[in-house]
Length: 150
Length: 104
Image 1: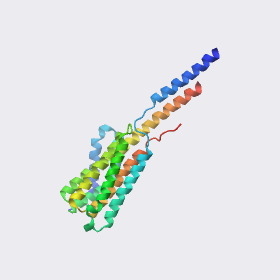
Image 2: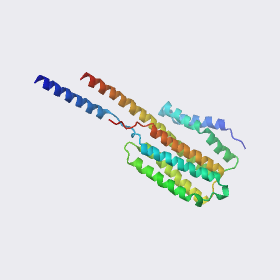
Image 3: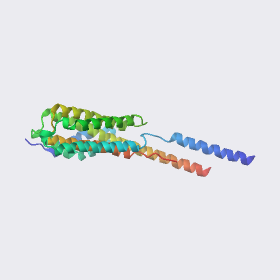
Image 4: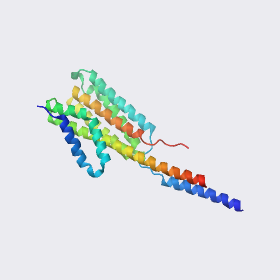
């Protein structure tokens, strides 16, 4: 009888401490998400592709029409990335970064459309700025803890 | 017309440092790092405006763009610090759990 109670006591105590430890573990940011990382890397590559392609064109041929499809494809992927961030808990900071990317992309697309041209100076800047932006997003995601599988 | 880019940068980091004094040294240091990393890009922008390569409207738009990108870079630092705190606290709790489990 004594052995039975001792064993039950030990089991209950173990469960209590496991539960307590689980309850005490904190989550300040979301876990790392492989899919988001892939989406960010793909977007960085597509944006770089667009600006590199524009740079290879003579300035007079850099019309909005020549890049309209690429702008649309990237906008759709940015929206998909935003949707993925919205469903992750404790993920407001990454969502803020994605919102910045969407705001810039919408603004830059409209600017290209209204001016229908792109100077070498602006191309260089945009290319470098989007690299910084996606690098910040990717580094921010990579620094998060990976999901632990038991 | 010429512009003393080095002096402008010192003034920029000084102003940012004063603005972030209350937030602690770490944030000010991180902001200075972000600013220094992008010194070349900002210097090109200032020079382009001084040389008349871009007009006032484009310069203002570019400054606003730059602010948004710096904001994204600063968010990144916030994520890193939160992830580090989370890892440290949960690591400490794991040690406690293991110690208790071993003792029971």
